[in-house]
Length: 195
Picture 1: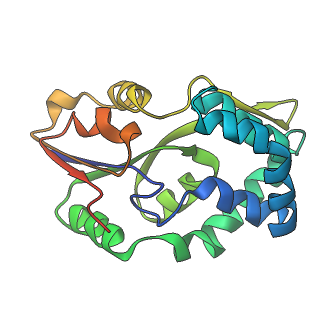
Picture 2: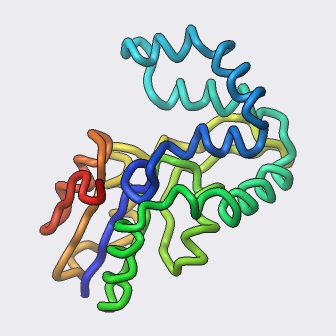
């Protein structure tokens, strides 16, 4: 049996989908106004003064806190139908299809929220392991449930879902330092392969 793990943002897509989902939900003007408000935190993040998860929660909280979860979900579904297909790298999609044609199990492992990746994955018959967002009283809190699915957390989530010793061949595709631990699991590791 063969399994192939794909990072999403920057590997399958040609850009980070966090800002794309914000633009899709809130509009370009609100997104740029938010960036101005978040600039001090973004600069601290760039200078490695605050961790990625805290920065992500700042951004998600600013744009989505108190949004009804049903509204967020329907917006994410619409994003996956209308906007996301335009961001997919053709070479990445071709690699996914090739794996599927050979009967391989394909999994997307992403730091992006499952909310705006899983609907696309379902359409493509791909399993999605992604960051889970917290919902309380049917409202988005802007917080991440558990840990951002990046770095070592990608490996933890993979091992939680699969017994890797059952697979004779493991492929992995990624494009950032956060993908290195996942790539280390694979016999066939590909870094930035679709550019």
